[in-house]
Length: 195
Image (tube, helix red, strand yellow):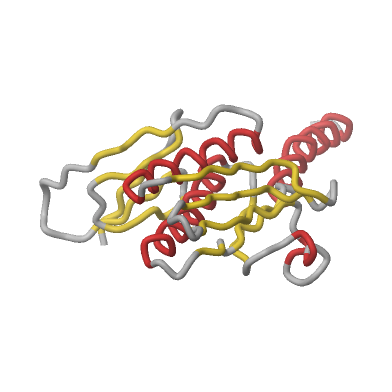
């Protein structure tokens, strides 16, 4: 093989490999802040579930690096640990004096120095709360990523040996001994790992 063709092969290989390495490290960093909630245990549980939903949905998209961070407000954007993040998702689930539940979620952009997307809703019944929270996640993230986000459900029927198993979706552990899991609609890689 001549020097020129060897050099051409090396340059082509670098041209293919470098963008992959750079793009993996240059994914936008999104902080998922702890949501403020009333002391009501149901609201605290929903706040935790919403935070988990934001994080797992962004992870499934595969186009963002996510990390959990303490409660956030735009006034603290320049402080540790927020100043290295490109975006922060934050908000609250509160019950007002009339027992109406107020949901308020936002996406803050460090580059723009302001909230770029916001979702607010009032729920009058605790029975509507989980569905309303799921809708809030899909709506806010849809606006953030610029496309409609839909989910499907994978159901697992265990009929083998009585051993524990872990489910991985697109390389991420999503749980152990699951009966079902929600995944983003589209093509996913599912791994079942027996322990």
